[in-house]
Length: 116
Image (cartoon, rainbow, N blue to C red; front, side):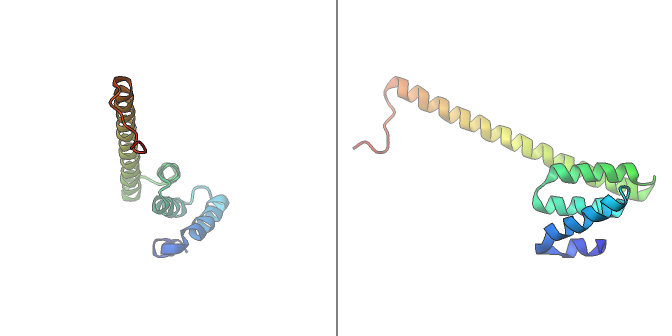
């Protein structure tokens, strides 16, 4: 079942439900945590993916599997940080545009589009 998660495509929600059941039965089931994290990434829920990857790293044994999980976790952390930076830039742009409109209104040079 876990191997099919990456092939499910459209039915990611059902995969998450199945994997959640598996994790509930066995909280240290590394493959279920890893595949559920991948499903969360597909949905854009990076916060939940990160939680599962952190749990999977803690539950995994030392070695190649753990290093692979750590790399995947670090990639998700990087994506989260990148999204935060993008949101901050968008917010700065929005504040700058609002400030420009206020300056124009005070100077009397701002014309509404509905004015003839």
